[in-house]
Length: 121
Image 1 (tube, rainbow, N blue to C red):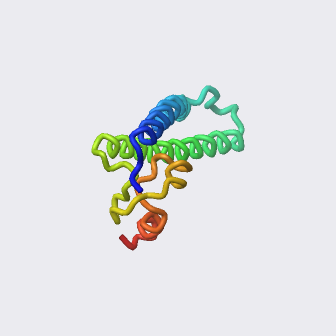
Image 2: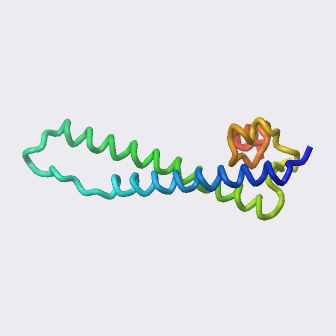
Image 3: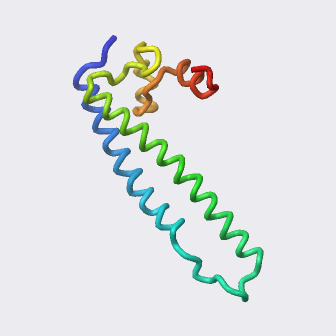
């Protein structure tokens, strides 16, 4: 059953809100990663430097995941404009409403996503 215009409008609003939140978070994360060490020098303990490096690595990984999510949100918004929102990019089957409610930026059915992640598609 195809999505109603009112449902699509709600999903679009949720996607726009998610995008804005993510952009705000990404802005803070990228600033944190770019921030130079305030305490670099000979007096800093190696363990402190290791902890700082670890924290920076974690921030980079989180930022990368957030960029991927942002890309998915942008694709979902693009699908709304193309009138293909709720249709799997791979199989062209309808994405179940429950999946869209849980993950409004989903562009594939669960089975297609699983095959895609396993490299089978």
